[in-house]
Image (cartoon, rainbow, N blue to C red; front, top):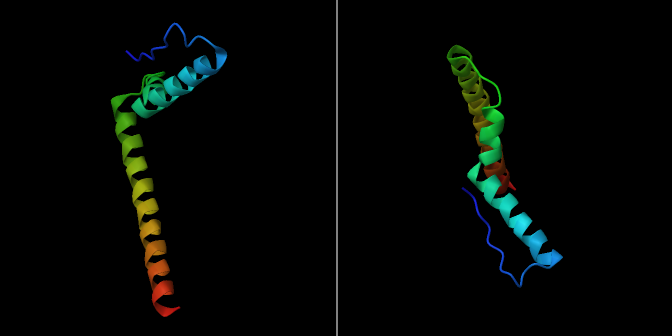
Length: 80
């Protein structure tokens, strides 16, 4: 369970806003919202496997393009 503590003296509006921002950061870092969105609907195991495979393919293409750009930048630095 995520908790953000606020002292009794810290009840003014600025500190409450800071506490809400900190809560938002913690929830984002832990991936709680993404997990809730993912579990919102049931996905059949076969469909989950297919989606995972498609995502892996997209990631491979993305990594390949990133590598090409990195090599192009290195060549650009080498040759001016």
